[in-house]
Picture 1 (cartoon, helix red, strand yellow):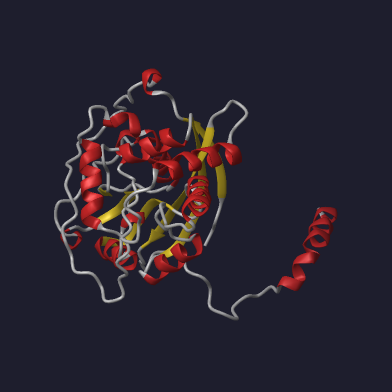
Picture 2 (cartoon, one colour):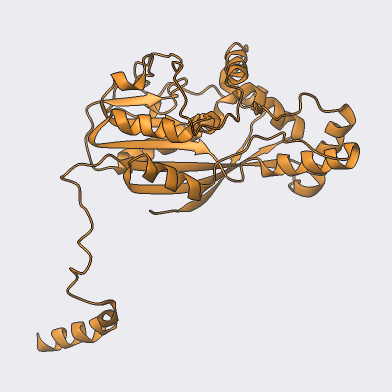
Length: 317
């Protein structure tokens, strides 16, 4: 499994200066919601899914919901780049969690649609999923279902928040709440670790795995503007163990701590979003596989002799 790390920097534009995103060849997309399904016995009930649905619906009903799409549009373009990196033609693709078509607008080969039916009713050669897996309670089962609907030699590409996402906000709230209230509660939801993600993909049946990470840093005027954007994205915390309210003094203290610890030279404050990108294939007999153990004809100890052998060959020529 390959892991790569890249760091990117974005600037959050003020709403007045924002430019609406253009529809760049947007394909026909049908929206829908995930059907209810039975959770596996090993599922952990971390998130309030009903609350998350209400948060998403509230965000979608706002007068200018597209001004909060800058992060999803950026990640959508990077998933599209990974699709083009695969030297294969896929006649049909399924886009899970497509939103307003953040991936489809960057593709010109595929007909993408959002699912309305249970995953078992689909059989696809490529499957994309973007920035929604981090709210799934039963992540192992979700990955198993994705693997199940893929055709043999089909590929799954996904992206999700993880790791140290919003660590600046998390630390600032914890320090301020501890100082003002004598303890703290989780105000940023937990995220999956990259090592666990590779294990979960393998356990779901995927092979030839690739997992890499991006860190996208967005600069905001202050902590409250960051929290406003998170609410506009529908990404507010929905963990069951969240604290319903924070005192005003605690919030002001957290904003002061945020600025003191992380402020940029121009007065803005950064927020880091760590994105995990994953690629996994469903097994097929035509896929390359490792040779059997003990079948090698050259040992690693002989690799140091390559230069001398190549120089002797050149002299003989």
